[in-house]
Structures are given as structure tokens and as C-alpha cells.
Image (cartoon, rainbow, N blue to C red; front, side, top):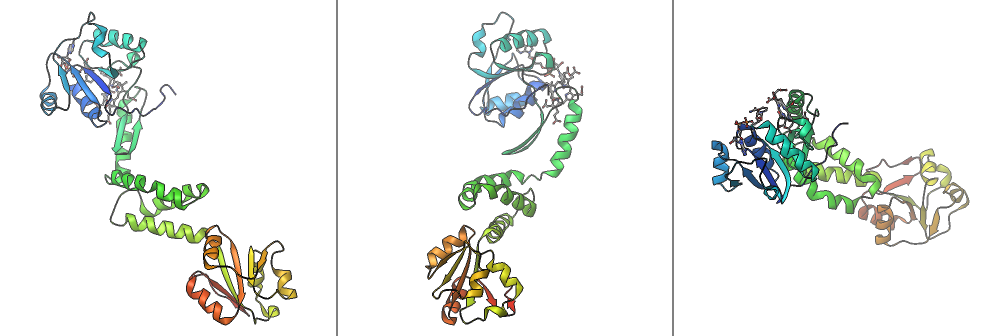
Length: 312
Ligand SMILES: C[C@@]1(CC(=O)O)c2cc3[nH]c(cc4nc(cc5[nH]c(cc(n2)[C@H]1CCC(=O)O)[C@@](C)(CC(=O)O)[C@@H]5CCC(=O)O)C(CC(=O)O)=C4CCC(=O)O)c(CCC(=O)O)c3CC(=O)O
Ligand SMILES: NC(=O)C1=CN([C@@H]2O[C@H](COP(=O)(O)OP(=O)(O)OC[C@H]3O[C@@H](n4cnc5c(N)ncnc54)[C@H](O)[C@@H]3O)[C@@H](O)[C@H]2O)C=CC1
């Protein structure tokens, strides 16, 4: 790797472009997207640069730079782009700037650069940068065009949407489930923003919660344990807690996971909390309370003789 890619914050940082021709124009237009304080040093400006100067997008210092110029010309610059048609001047100042640790780009002289500009796909917060280290700018440009195709213009809006919901996802999901959440969201939504994006987000969130939520099982206290289906035994063997006023009868007690806790009651809010951290609960109670729990917890499933109810 000849160059290491880094993304530089140029917002309100001084950037100086030397030269006012076609190349300077292209670099200025690119860099203005990053909102720098832009100074242009050149004796004359191309028509497009003149228009930008009139729109106050840049400061123009109308002068020629020379090898004898005072170094103060670049005093506050974070980045300097040398884009005159005087190759010797470009290179000489580039070497001096490099020696002082200033970032410098020389448009037609990679050896004199300590930074080079990649081909880029700009979708707001999402930015793809492609470099060939100067070996093949045309290939970088072709790849850029290919990637442009796979990222709709509305990707930028999608990035804003996603950035605005990162905190919500952090709050809602533990760290080990967030990456999977986002993979599912992008698989469902794709890379563009549409009127369905919010619904796609909500659906992914709901599915993730359902997938990772605990289980609430209901069983009538009158049930005859020997008539339970095999599937019910598997459920019993994985329980975290059994809630039952009466002690469990012998066979049932054997089938429930040995270290599951046994309690005689549990409040609605405790049930909610336990389910939200993935606990598996079994309520053994009378018909009336079962009915109440079924209405209160829509995800509840019932264990009956001969069958267990399908998941909702
Ligand atoms: C080192 C670097 C310095 C810098 O500018 O930062 C540099 C140097 C040089 N470019 C030259 C030529 C061309 N450059 C392009 C195009 C782009 N050049 C860009 C970047 C860079 N060019 C940096 C390295 C980037 C990297 O490879 O990682 C892009 C990616 C970004 C941008 O400039 O915005 C932009 C594509 C943007 C896009 O399409 O997305 C084309 C094609 C065209 O114009 O259609 C040609 C003509 C074909 C050819 O000659 O290959 C020459 C020879 C000049 C001469 O003949 O004298 C040199 C000097 C040399 O090689 O010595
Ligand atoms: N135009 C192109 O597509 C390409 C150009 N290049 C090279 O990039 C350089 C710039 O190209 P262009 O912008 O097309 O040239 P250009 O001739 O259009 O512009 C050069 C600019 O530099 C200014 N300038 C000259 N001496 C100066 C000094 N001492 N101080 C301040 N400003 C000064 C001029 O006033 C002019 O505005 C040239 O060396 C060229 O060979 C390289 C690759 C492609």
C-alpha cells in the first residue's frame, strides 16, 4: 500500500489553491463540497472561478506566486494544492511545504505530493474513494462510474435517516445484536431511501425483538402431565422459571430444567422485564388467569394435552 487512505475534515479549515486554470477549477469545485475556507492565489481566474469568487465561495488573492515569495502566504493552510502551469514552481513549493508538514497536492506530479485526490462517489455521509496511487487514474475513474451505478442518488438521504436512528438502535438492542440488525435492515431496504424506508426500519426492529424476546408459556393446572406431547417436554427442559401457586407434581417437576427457578407469582411488569432479556417462563394456573394472560401477552403460547400452540 503506497498511500494510506484517511478522510480529512476540511470544514472551515483553510485550503489554498495556487493557479486559476482548468485544473484548479476542477479541484476547487470538488473541495468546496467539504466546506473549507478556500483561498485562491493566481494572477487571473477562469470564468467559472470568477463566478465562484463573485458568489463569495472563495477568497481570491490576485498575485503570482514565486520562489521568492514569503512563506507566510500559506501560514494557516491545512492543505495546499499547486495547480499552476509552472512545473518547477509547483514542485519547489511542494517540497518546502512537505518539509513543514503541510498537506500538499501537485496535480501533475505525484512524486511531489504527500496527498493525492482519489476518484470519488459522493453520497453525503457515504463516500467511496478509489485510488490507483497515480498508476491509472482512468481505471480509478471507470471503477467510480461502476460504483455510481450501484448506489442510487437517494443513498445520501438514506445515510441521514440511518445516522438519525443509530442512537435509537443502541438503546433498543444490546451490542452483540446491532450489527445483525443493520445487516437485516439493509438487506430489506436496499441502499436507497424511499417512502418505505421508515416501515422497513420498523419491521426490522419488530422482527429483531420477536426473534430475541423470551418465551411465555401457559398451562392449565388441571392438565394431566402424562398426556403432554413430546414437544412440550422440550419446552419444559429449557425453562428459566415456572410460576405456579401449587408445587409441581412429581413427573412435571422432573421434566422442568433442574436449575429453573420456581415462584408462586409474578407481576406483569416483571414478566415483561424477564421476556425482554430473553427468559423462558411457564405459567401454570387456572383457566381464568390463563385467559387474562393470553389477552395481556399476545406472544404467549399454550401447552395442552396432545399439542402445543404454534408460535404467533
Ligand atoms: C497523482 C494524481 C494527483 C492528483 O491530482 O491528486 C494524478 C496525477 C495525474 N493524472 C494524470 C492524468 C489524468 N488524470 C485523470 C483523471 C483523474 N485523476 C485523478 C487523480 C490523480 N491524478 C491523482 C492520483 C489518483 C490515483 O490514481 O489514485 C482523479 C482520480 C481525481 C481528480 O483529479 O479529481 C481523476 C478521475 C476522477 C474521476 O473520473 O472520478 C485523467 C482522465 C480524465 O481526465 O478523464 C487523466 C488523463 C489520462 C492519463 O494520463 O492517465 C496525469 C498525467 C498528466 C499528463 O499527461 O501530464 C497525472 C500526473 C502523472 O501521472 O504523472
Ligand atoms: N488541463 C488538464 O486536463 C491537465 C493539466 N495538467 C497540468 O496541470 C497544470 C495546470 O493545468 P491547467 O489548469 O489546465 O493550466 P492553465 O494554463 O489553464 O492554468 C494555469 C493557471 O496557473 C496560473 N499561474 C501560472 N503561474 C502562476 C504563479 N506563479 N502563481 C499563481 N498562479 C499562476 C495561471 O494564471 C493560470 O490560471 C499544468 O501544468 C498542466 O500541464 C495535467 C493533467 C491534465
